[in-house]
Image (tube, rainbow, N blue to C red; front, top):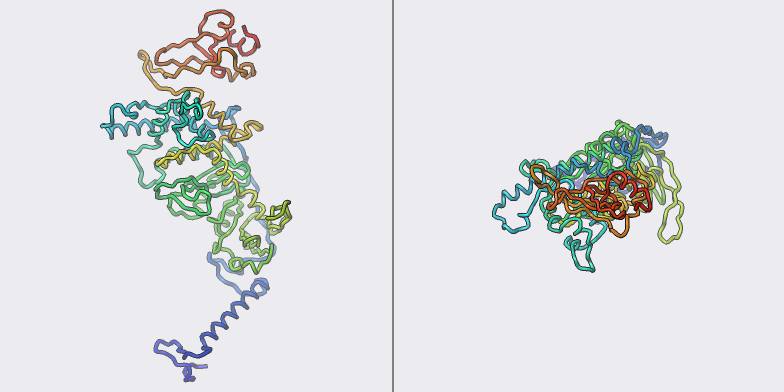
Length: 579
């Protein structure tokens, strides 16, 4: 009826209706009627299918409710068309030495770059501080070389599984806490001096637009080797990795749900079968679109029929449709307002009940809402809309019990945790020391990932050997610390590498490995010259046992025993009694 006809409903100058106060005013009645209508709408919405309701509502990403269907879902899973496993140099390497696989990633080329930048930074420091004390430790600096850098990093790896609260304690001479291998391998002052000047890029040509400039050459080189040496298996996953950092940094992130709450975050793509890190991209605070981040991590894997499991932080219906166009299957949880139909967006626990399920599809993407301990929403392009019985642990029970779960949830639980497993494995033996310099810690984090990837390559090429990462690391440490640190000096007119005296084998007994039959491992090398003797020679072990006083300039690198080439070498490595 017209409001003007009723004197009880006056109209203000602005055109709004003014209701006089009463016990039950009309605005209260209208709000009550609106509440009843909303409840009736939601009850009818979940009781009848969409086709019976005949209504359509717009989604956030431009779709309509009529585009989502309940029946006749047929996933279009792309066939896997890649050849997984080690590739290129990793596939051609015929070796059972762990250090050979690590050096596929941490190559001499990379170490030479680090050595050059370290020496350059030391020169720049001394030019900028000419008034340093003449007897200070910095004034005894000598340029670092690749062999010495390997020894330095070998001792750094060793600190990963030999724990001490302070770095200086590794060189302690106290009989209770002494670890003599460190002092025998490298002096403490030299180790700390290399750590002081360790550098990865030239400060003189600093690029202010790149926040990862200080580690950019090392980061790009190592990640490039990750992608070059391995092809992941069919299932891959993308998740976050975190390197702990509490200092001041513009792109430091805080995640209260992560075990490492403060640090440098990286997006990591892993192989779900082995945990191999195929690609990683540090987050530096610059916003980029979700598809750009995902496709940059996929790199050359797009179009090969991979199944990508992705977390809810960058998942959406629109992204799934783009991945389908790139012939990549995808599955993962979905947060609210990411393109799902309205019926999925507004569903609650009470609507589904215990282990209830609601599913809709648009022909390309299937969205599932399932009630577990909490409401779970999943999106998939490659799984059927069916339930699967699995055995799970429940609180208060001593044995597993059966539970029905959607197939996409079961597949996600099996394949998604590899990035977390990678972070867990490298956290067991961390060789990252406290430092106010974030590039040093980040490169150490990269080396940890490189160590794990080399371990995966080694197991693929040598199944049954080095079953644990710790055993793999121990052999790498032995290989990189076998030679003492090297410095270049001039002897006459020729530059030679000066070394500390080579390690001597015990005179009273011989190494057990001398008769292992692996002649390729027992190679003769010339004894390294020292500062006191440019042409060193030692008594041949075989000749001495035979009563002869003859010296040799060569020694067996594996046995650490001086030998003459020819008869002495063969007798020592093939006969039980060689004298």
